Image 1 (cartoon, rainbow, N blue to C red):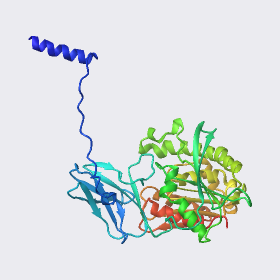
Image 2 (image 1 turned 45 degrees about the vertical axis):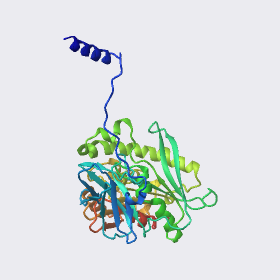
Image 3 (image 1 turned 90 degrees about the horizontal axis):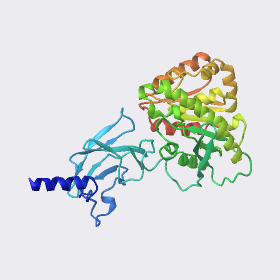
Image 4 (image 1 turned 30 degrees about the horizontal axis):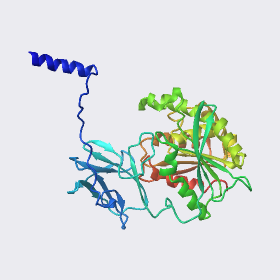
Length: 392
């Protein structure tokens, strides 16, 4: 009994802070052997343009790599483990492009912890790898500058930032340059257009080839994150009913009252409608449609790539403007509408918009990408094509 009481006293003393109690944690994860070259346990592109995916996970029981850009085209590949604890799988030779992938480690979705190239989403869960040989490469050409500009949004009452690409040698002197405003998609960030969309590389390379005019490209944050419109507060099924309309109105005010005045004031740019283009993808395509139609006299060029449209998210201003086809045809130098053939996210949206434009007799360029879904393999080439049309 005395021994039991003594043990109880020690326990009470420990709980009250009278003595320290040792804590037991799991051991730290094993790290790769320091004598092994890093190239032997990280993902890499091979000389034949295949990719060897690798992940160091000696304690895992099952690892697979999932390739593809949407759930509609995901493919899972079982990986094998060597004696050093490195799991690997080698792809076939691939077309030059930027590819997405992630690992399934015993049921846990993981980015490639051996790579710094992650898909810049609001919830990061995918990695990127570039197979060289396309317009997406960093080539030995004159490079523009990528600026990060932080500003105070009076409309949103918060500090915000935009990314701005300026052409090589731009110093603000000479003739004012036109501006393309480009909105990213839902769940992404401005860096999605930069790192995954590869806008700086596309612009550098097209300009070096003489295929585009010098311009500024401004990439705002499509999601306003205002208190009443934080996307996490809305279940996916409710987003088009609640979040999208609220967010679009807030982003529209920010564009017209904060972003464009800031760009006009800080840079030597054109301020006429023909000197401004507006485009976006997915949710950003909806934003471009809303702002472009509600402020038609402010833009001369408009594009939506796989955008949400008023077919599922009504907007009174857009509807009213679409009923004035002569005004749209007179104002817009180009109106581009793009979608992937198998787009299961916004395919119906774009089909509805296309039917409405045809019904009203509104002039527009339409392109469907065969066999593709709601993905960057639609949006990167669509952007490259559109940017070659504007300001000419």
